[in-house]
Amino acid sequence: MAILGNPFVATVPARTLSAQELIQAIRVDIAGELEAIIGYEAHALATTDERVKKVLYHIADEEKQHVGELQQLLYVLSPTEEQSFEKGRQAVQQQQSSNFQQPMQ
Image (cartoon, rainbow, N blue to C red):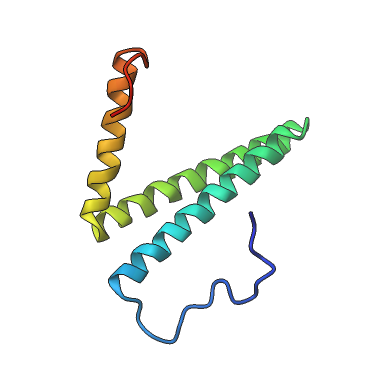
């Protein structure tokens, strides 16, 4: 959901963010990139103009790269976050190896 109605949404306080605030800000940035991807791809799906589709999908792909960059930055700032994501990734891989027949743990 776009939050453009709030003109102060991107205003950074006139102080340095704490480590935890910076981590939270990066999470918000990731959410914004994901929101942009959803929007661009939805617009591409909603048109039959192949020129427009090509450009919108290209832009969405760039946003996906931004997600990866921000995710890696989050891991640098919070190694425990990376560990949690890795546990989740491994859980799904285990499920996949059993053709999603085992219950999640």
